[in-house]
Length: 113
Length: 121
Image (cartoon, rainbow over all chains, first blue to last red; front, side, top):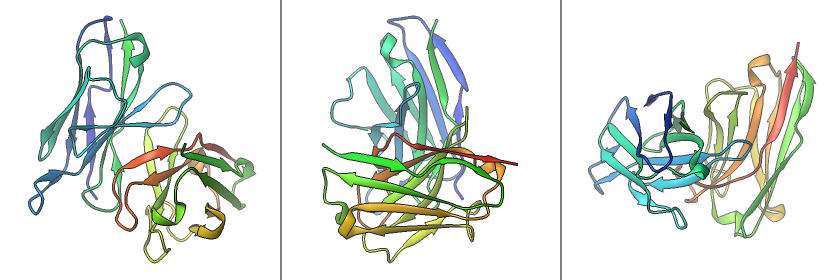
């Protein structure tokens, strides 16, 4: 199974500042046949289900604000919030879909400082 | 509008059974693979089981293999999770989620609100 890890476990950022979340996979998520990284990011606000933010590591889901960006390739990925807003307080999780079983990272909790 | 509505959760004693349901609307249910994902209190997301559009391909997490059964009824746009021999570590909020593909597992673009399963000893 592919193991997903995230860092940090939590972070507190001032409003308007940058938040950076890292996700690492135990093996490469880059498929050579199509040059795509099989990684998704989800946002889960308190008391709500997860919401898809990014797929293929960097493709933004419709409706996601452009202050969110996804990057990385292979085994190392990053979710960046360039200017944190109060409504961005949430748990952020990465998920690989390169192979079964689907596996999620443990999540990174983002709070306002 | 895509909607997924889970039901069937509750408080159950260790060793007993429970059946979860997920009703889908707003999309062609029979065209997509579906998943169950759970989240223990204060923990991260854990994939539980997946089923392809025609039920030909089914996968389970090792932690539930042999105890849980995923199934679907495309005529009723419904997904199910039959859970047997429940244990304390099965306590979680169980989400029904839609895949973007029909038969290979990808990312999950819609999630229900979840149904809470609490297993007591």
